[in-house]
Length: 322
Image 1: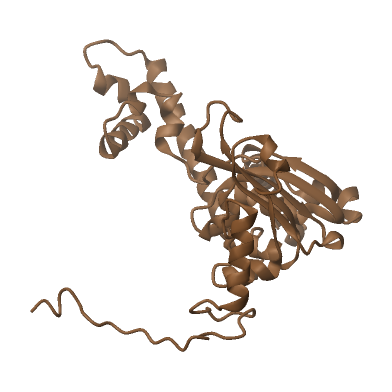
Image 2: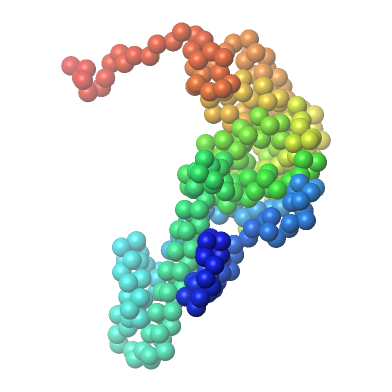
């Protein structure tokens, strides 16, 4: 912004620019169109493959200090940890915890440097969070996934969707919450409504990723999306798969159309979960005949209250206790 509005590149301006560039380098800022101008001049990438990081955009004190300071890591609670971080900022942490032994000056200076590193990392995380939560109507980079307690896998998924060409395809591994969580329902709804989702195959982690949560504690999805020129009317799904062979089981893999998802989950636009093709077919037939009780108002809702339902409170545990 400074480069665009200021034509006087004096010493102060150059200093501010250098600071901004250093902040970008420290935060690993990456601008796709500037990094790949030839690719985006042709409409985007033809193929994108990835396993995005699954991390919250929030600095966790325990995680930051886990490999940097045993004194802070071993704090018994948040209050004690806050006190130790304060001592760290003063270069007095080791002195307060172990006053019986001498502490050289370089040890105190190292504590202050570690505190400054912590403050810098915290500011970077807070700035990233603010950037990612900018509303789409205001030019936000993540109009669909920059909501709530943001996770990087959702942001990467939206980026992948943005950078593939109309003829392109993308495959990536993300938590299955991409299709079922409230925080990502806008993005999943976009994929479905634009017919950009080709397949979504969920697996329980039965030895696929060593060191991660096992079984139903960790579920991930092999997700494939396509560009606007390859829209698909039938999306393939698998849920709670436990081995690769389940991808070839016609009784486990089922298809849903955008209309099926909007009919079954018209309010959330998230994906219904079925363990078999048979379950999916029964449910689809039911919802084709019988509408949901209440449809929240949106552009897809033909009838808001097809059953004519009224809600009222009959008995209240407090007001009607007598």
